[in-house]
Image: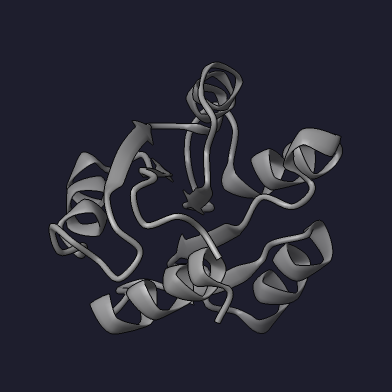
Length: 132
C-alpha cells in the first residue's frame, strides 16, 4: 500500500493530444490514492526519454504511434530490470484477440480497448496503486 501523501506519476503515451487530455480528465482532483501527476509523450521514443528522466508509477500506453509503437515500447522496457514490475496498461483501439494475446505475451499488465470508460480506467489503476 502506498502512502497517501505521495504523488503518483502516470505517464500517458498517445500520439493524440486529445486522447491524452481525455485520459487526464478522467481523474478527479483527489482519487482514492491521493495526488496524481501526469507526464505525457506523443510517441514511443519520447516515452522512453521521459522514463529515463523520471520515476513513473504507471504507464498508460497506446499501441499505434509514429516512430516507436506501443508494443515495441512494452517489449523494450520489459527487458530492463528497472521496469519489469512497472504496471503498464495498454489503452488502444486494437481490439482483435490476437492483439490482446500479443500484448500479454510481451508483458502488458492490463489492456483496455478505446474508448475507455472512466470507471474501468480508475478501477484498474486503483488496483495497481492500492494493491486491490
